[in-house]
Image 1: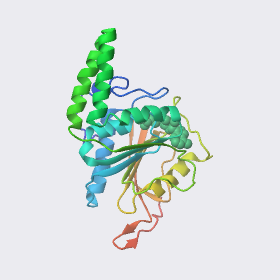
Image 2 (image 1 turned 90 degrees about the vertical axis):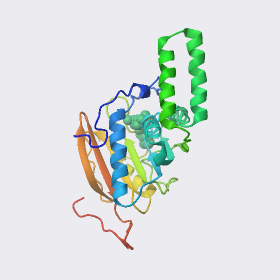
Image 3 (image 1 turned 45 degrees about the vertical axis):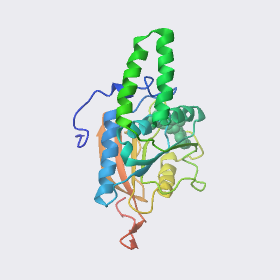
Image 4 (image 1 turned 30 degrees about the vertical axis):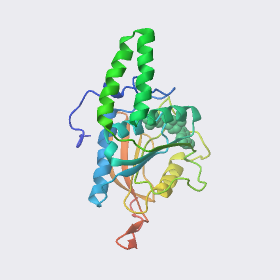
Amino acid sequence: MKYIFEVEKKDYSDFASGRVLYSAPNTTGFPVRLASEIIQRAFHILAREGKHGPFRIYDPCCGGGFLLSTIGFLFPEKISELIGSDLDPQALEIAAKNLALLSPEGLGRRQQELAEYATAYGKDSHREALASLERLRKLLGNHTVETTCLQRDITDLSPSPIHDVDIIVTDIPYGQLASWGGASGTPVESLFENCHRALSKDAAVLVVVADKKPKLRHQSFRRVEHFRLGKRQIAFFQPLGRQVGGGKDACHPEY
Ligand SMILES: C[S@@+](CC[C@H](N)C(=O)[O-])C[C@H]1O[C@@H](n2cnc3c(N)ncnc32)[C@H](O)[C@@H]1O
């Protein structure tokens, strides 16, 4: 896979899980360069349809909210709301703390906490975290990103509490750290169905990140981009059956 937007590899250590962002048990941070590339590709797909944001962005398997928070710090001006849901209430507690960092007040509280640790323990890691926090503060500027966190089984097909989302980006369970829980025997299929319900009826994008195993296709979506990076596959979809130019587009036969 060739990076199109995040062409230059940078030092992303300011985002390291457990430094300024809180780390959730049994999760690893999502690669920052890849997160930036993915969301810029999603912005580009929507820009081609005349949608330039700010966008409502939803991660239905948000874990500790690392992916969403990263996107929030990198592109605060492109976001009207970040929504995270997960089955695991403990992960959601961390997600709420991470998403709360996306405001000058939230960063101020975290700065105070880290300063207290630095005074109490005199560790370099806390001083480095404070320096990282200053750089994240610069990225965020004066923006306060609106955020929502809720517990939800994304494989449960009861009526969706979430609508009118412009972009869904989600890193679904794989590997040894996170596995599917919830009601459905076919979780990936149910995830697609729920995402279709949550997405805006005009231009919208779903991005699914997974390991190599699942077949990432669904009859309600047209797959518009797909690439592999290391052990991951990343697929971009646009929902079918939405209003296009006054009529409904048809389900694409090859998907
Ligand atoms: C790979 S982790 C996501 C990590 C997240 N992207 C981050 O940045 O922290 C997958 C998540 O899916 C969640 N999950 C598993 N089954 C689920 C379900 N049925 N509904 C919602 N979330 C689920 C797990 O609790 C886990 O947090």
